Image 1 (spheres, each protein chain N blue to C red):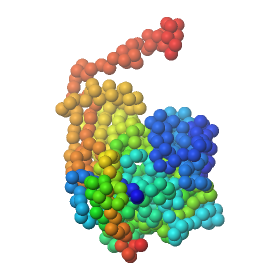
Image 2 (image 1 turned 180 degrees about the horizontal axis):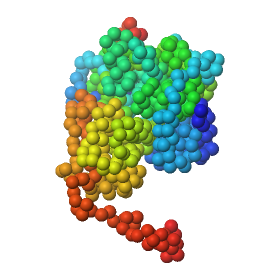
Image 3 (image 1 turned 120 degrees about the vertical axis):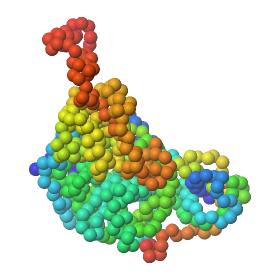
Image 4 (image 1 turned 90 degrees about the vertical axis):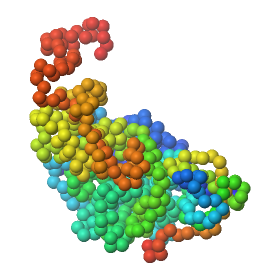
Length: 84
Length: 482
């Protein structure tokens, strides 16, 4: 199971079970740990609803401690084509 | 005339080793928090710089932590004895930067530029091939650039800027970080490149010689590459980038080249900041797209760890901000006796000593420094008389607590420029970059009668000279050790 984390200003305001755009960080150990990705994904506060694990943090990095789940629909390249 | 200085990070490491201000860390350390935790503890203990010889996942790379986080190390960087008192270090800085003639950097051939020993372009230019540390738990990412400088150039005048703008690794090719609009690079980027929808070439220089780092940290009135020459007494040696015509210090450890993108924003932060807090939240910030990485053999990444005092930013910004303020005030003929910022104030509080030559002098001083280019970086001015030792915390706290009238002596300035990093600022002030400032006037008013002015009761002020001499001469005979 892949594990990610993401930063949210207010967990109560995160839309669940609908496709949203957000930045997640890949927590896989190794050189690329903490790589950020802009993705379209569905998230849920239910830890087993989606196949991957998502650890929420608050806006100033506070560790929430309770895992959520996430399904990544696709990675989005945030850089406009002209600048890639 | 060249002063004694260190042309690269490696000579500086040896100099710190010789003065006992460096520890070689032979066991492997993890870039994921362990390295950062060591550097943090060193900063809090004001200890020797750790030179990490082995970094997990990154064989061949080394790191130097807290390279300039004490006045001892700053003195060494200037070629002075490590134990040089702070006022003397300040005098050396002022003399060199006021009396010298700034020199344009000297371009050297790439064969004489160690930073070109290895060149990565294309897919090899991958930020995850560099050992960016996770500096603090809870940071928004891995910060490759914590003790470094970003080189950029004005597209119209060609004037070069070196500045320290933190950079977080976003992905293999992308870094992101705040570029505040009132900063030198912010003015250049947002006022010139962005309106033309033109990417701004940049080069991030990591592990430069220490005086180039001091220059990049300083609120210099001239381009920092020339300002560095004032500190060194000779021109900085630079070499042309691979992907742009920017010039970078030839002896630096690692160069990351690329472009700052107009109209593109990505999430950055939070980050443990120089104020000692994670204040600015995760927000969309300026994007750096990388094109090439060049580096020396066995490169040594330099790592600062911002947090509670004392780190490089706090110490060097306090040092150079106060001395640039001193130059400004003297240039205006204000009869100041000195300017000092304690690094522990995270360069928010400046103490200015002055002769009380005329009524309103404290406000004039505050208006000048708050209104200058230096103003956004601090918000508290304490003005004391010429008899108060501005470097002596006890004396300044005593003056502040006893001479500053809670109504007449405190003057509040609202609606000024501020930074989003101020922990005390309201969320709205942070969003808009608004600030508030305050002057603590610790001068007894000039319109008081001499007989109204309280007399300072201290050993040096209320005993005749002969009594003081006698007491000092007999101190040990009385039974005291010191």
